[in-house]
Image (tube, rainbow, N blue to C red; front, side):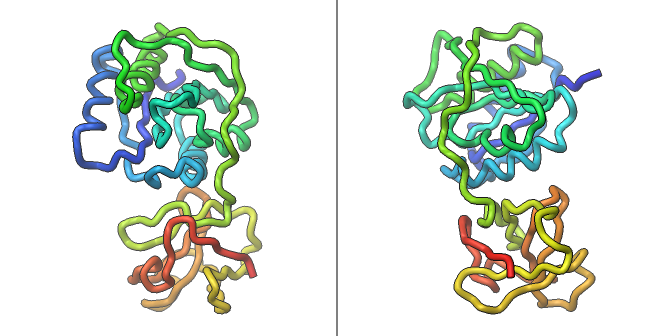
Length: 243
């Protein structure tokens, strides 16, 4: 049976009232449907970077899952609200480039523009007032009004960028690991030195930088028992290159 699970992907952060309000909106419409916090520290204000992360996570979501994805610096503007179906999973959120990578990688894609609006719609919190309720109605089998559409937003950032830095300082890129030869070396910034691959952290001495295929099948840069972002001066959107 297809999953009725709702997954939340946002740049709201793990603190504050925002995620809780989204969950409350879902529970009111679809009580009993599991709601999973997939990620709330996506790159803030950067749907172009977050698109690479979202695509990798969506590929591992259960069939039938509904993903509410909100990285939406243009909230309250004319940017469309959409439901994007990618290989049997439905993404609900803004048409601002956030869904571009997932759609490009999918074997089957369908796009609908959300025409329904709630009686009360905050100009600054469509995650709570529009996207969460639409996802809940989908899960409950009472979909809101939509119209056929296509994605209109700009392309995402190039994949040879750092798209996420975790709490250990590991730097995830948008590069699929399958795009690199197993022995490829990676350079960062203006540094002429390159780093080689390793299967896992314990395969190199402590303090050694390396790249590896992470659990999302993306290229990630790390330092064994160290902080790659600090040691290699990596920041979000930093470019990497393949030697």
